[in-house]
Image (cartoon, rainbow over all chains, first blue to last red; front, side, top):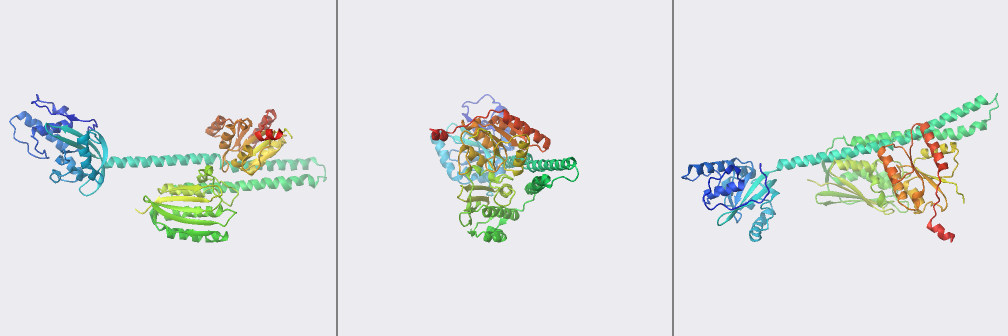
Length: 438
Length: 154
C-alpha cells in the first residue's frame, strides 16, 4: 500500500477533462475526483451512485467507490471545521464505528486526550497560518476506538482544495501489531546483548579468576617436588647416618608447609569460585514468579534472619514504611539480604553502624534505599563493585565478590535496576528500583 | 642511596608473589622487592598520593603488574603510568594469567614493555621469570627525579 508522505494538493480541473486515467491517480486525487462528480454530496460509503447520463463516467465512479470500499487503509475525509464527511469500511473496522455514527461529527472523537481537545485549534491554526503539523506529512499517532481502547496508528493527511472550500483526507493504518513486533524484537535484542555480555564475563572469569588458583597449585606442587628431590639428594649423597637434621629442617619446617598451605588455599579458592560461578549462572535459568510484594513483610523477614549479625556489631537498623512492588519474592529477598550483609561487612571502624531502609514511588517505579554509614566506595570504583568476583576490599570479611553481581543480575531479569551513591568514608546509599504495583 | 633496581610487584595473590620471588631468587636476582596488594596502592606509591608508601627519588624501579586486582586494575595503572611524562620511563612487565590476544594488544598499545602470561605450566613460568631476569639485568633502567627531590636538594 502506498504510504506517501508527500504533500498532495490538487486543484480540480475546471473544464471537463478528457477521460482521466484513474488508475494512475493517488487516493487523494481519486477522492477529489469523486467528490467533484458527486456535486459535494457527502460521499458516505455505500451511497448509491446518482444517475448520470454518461455511462463511461458511471463506470469511473464505480471504480473509485470500489477502490475506497476495498482499501485496507481507513480513509476519512473531513471539512474545514473538522467534521467528518465520509468514512470507508476499513476506517469503520479500525475505529469500531459505523459510518453513520461518525458523519457530521467532529473527527476529534477518534483521538484520545489531549489530542482530542487540541485538534480544532490545530486545524484553525493551519487554515490561518498554513503551517502544517501533520497535513501532507505521515506520522505515528494514537487513535481512540469506539470501545475506548487507544491504539497506535500511522496517519497521513492530504489536503484537497476545491472550487470554494477545502477538505482533508486522512489515511489510517492500525499499527498495533507492527508496534508489538517491534517491541518484541527490541526485547529480544536486549536479551541477546545481555547474553553476549554474560559470555564476555565468562571469558574474563575463565582467563583471570579461574586460572589464578591453578597457577598457585601447580607452582607450589612443583616447589614440593623440588624439596623432595633436594631431600632425596641429601640422603643419597650423605654417607652412613651422618645426615644432619638441621640440613633438612629448613625445608620441612618452612618451604614444605608453605607450599602445602598455598596448594590447599588454591584448591579451596577454586572450589569457592566454581560454586559461586555456578550460583551466578543458574540465576539466569531459574524461573521467576513475579507477584505483588509486600516489602514491609519482605524486609522484616530479611532483617530477622540477619538479626544476630546486626546485633553482634551493635548496628542500629531503621526501616521506614515501604511501598509495595512487583518481583520474585525469593530473589528480591536475596537482593536485600546481600545489600544488608554488605552494609554490615563494610561498616566503618570509626563510628557505630547504622543502616536505614526507606522507599518511595516515582513514576510507577518503587525505589528502595539501603543507606549505611560505612567505609563507602570511591566514585571511580563504583562500577567495579558490581563485577562478579571483584572485591574492592578483599581483606574485609569473608566473601567471593558475588553479592552485588548477583543483586544486579536478579534485578536485570525483573525490570529492576540498582546503583550506588557513595564517597569514601561517607557510607553507601544503594538504590534499588522495581516495577510498582500494576 | 643504592642505584640497584627495586622490583615492584603489584599482585593481589600472595601465592603468585611468593612464586615470583622464589623464581627471581633462583635466577640469581636478589634485588629488593616491594609488594603492593592492589592497583590503588601501587598507583599511590608511584604518584605519591594517599597516606601509604611513596617512591623515593633517584631509585630506579621496575614494575611487575598483574591485571586483575581489586579497585584499580593493572590496565588502568598502566594507562595512568604511561600517560605521565615523568613516570612513563619506568619499565612495566604485565605479569598476568590471561593470554587473551585483545588484552595483550591493549597492554602493548598502552606501552607496556613486556607481557608475560603466568602459565599454569611451571616450567614455562620459570623460563618466563628467567627471561625477565635477563631483561632486568640488560635493561638500562632510568632514574626518576621528582620535583620535590630537586627542590630539597637545592
